[in-house]
Amino acid sequence: MAVASPKLTEPIVPNKGRLHDPFIWHKLHSATGIFPIGFFLLQHLLANSYALRGAGAYNAVIRVYGGLPFVAVLEVALIYAPLLYHSIYGIWISAYGQSNLTKYAYGRNWMYFLQRASGLVAAVYISVHVWDTSIHKYIALWHGNPNPDTAISYAAMSHQMANPWLFWLQAIGIVATVFHFTNGLWNFCIRWGLTISAQAQRANQYVCWSLFAVFAGMGLWTIVHLRADGLQRIQTASPVVAITQR
Ligand code: HEM
Image 1 (cartoon, rainbow, N blue to C red):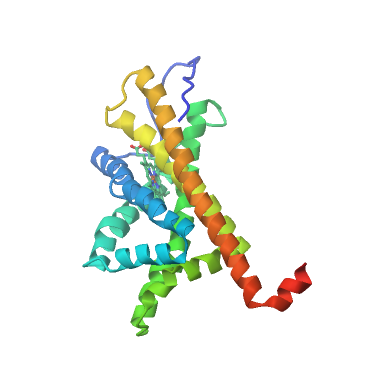
Image 2: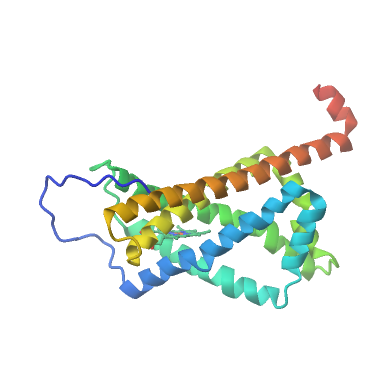
């Protein structure tokens, strides 16, 4: 989000990069990053923060989402299809775009690089997360489990967060994904002509960094709370381990 305009000392030559990027598909990639995916990300972090109010509140929110009419159709149309398009196109851009960080280590070049790196981290993180939650839910449903939502319950989440590997994957994933979204929002506002002057772009930096701090903080606080509860549940369930660990 920080802007440091490079002082050009070399003549600008026409772009002879390997990426031939069709305008309309890039615009669609940009738009899907905000709606529906970005919008979903923010509401998802907010919904999960109900864990801070305890198991009852969290499970009630999960039941509301799980009980929406046509939930599977909504998930595919509003989350998985746009996310898949954005991710595949994003991986293609990352593979063929040319980062000139080694040549010009300016602030904006760092942001260009970090936007791509955080997108790739988000791709790994979201795949593991969707496998652990939604896909497990549908597998449970397929096996005739009458209560498939237990795969996404407070107990399941706090148990997962008690595992240090899953906890750190989640922490890194949340920070990278929220950074990707908020830095992307800053770029989006320029791309769509919403912040044209340098002053507007500078002001928007504060908005985007504030959004980053609020939503990354919210996500991290939620998983720290779930981890503390998960560890406590494990200790209470096996008092022998608790005594020997003191
Ligand atoms: C929660 C998931 C995601 C959200 C909310 C999100 C959001 C965004 C936003 C808002 C932008 C800025 C669009 C613009 O420049 O106009 C963006 C750009 C980008 N995204 Fe994502 N994204 C997500 C996941 C991913 C994934 C999984 C990848 C895969 C690598 C990815 C790769 C990219 C790339 C490479 C760009 C830069 C495009 C450019 O410079 O023109 N994104 N994303």
